[in-house]
Image (cartoon, rainbow, N blue to C red; front, side, top):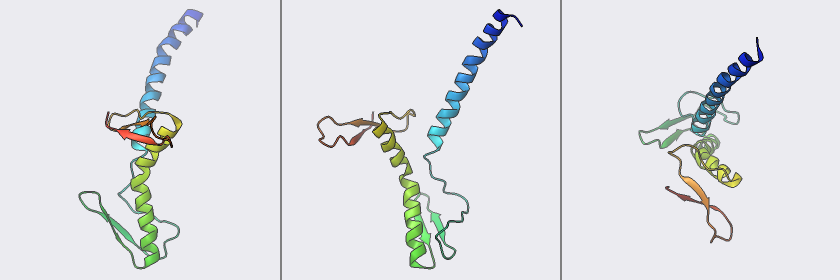
Length: 122
């Protein structure tokens, strides 16, 4: 293969790899924060069988046989639901803005003495 042919091949493959990696990264960043709400899971820390049902609005209803399992699952479900917010604050804390259009932008208020992120709809 000549040097010119290798250079031409590199100019073709490099944009394809770049676009593919950007698409894959975008999909991971968009779908990773969403909680998994379907299926069955075995969680360490639960003593007996318990069930979490979500209604049409996404509100969880926990059916447990003892108080320990009830509160354990309540914490688990809350963590699932708050993962989106935690991801948003993590990005705001590192100074990165969300890439997807459905996430609100996070900006730091200059008038705030703590510098905590404030959400805006733009």
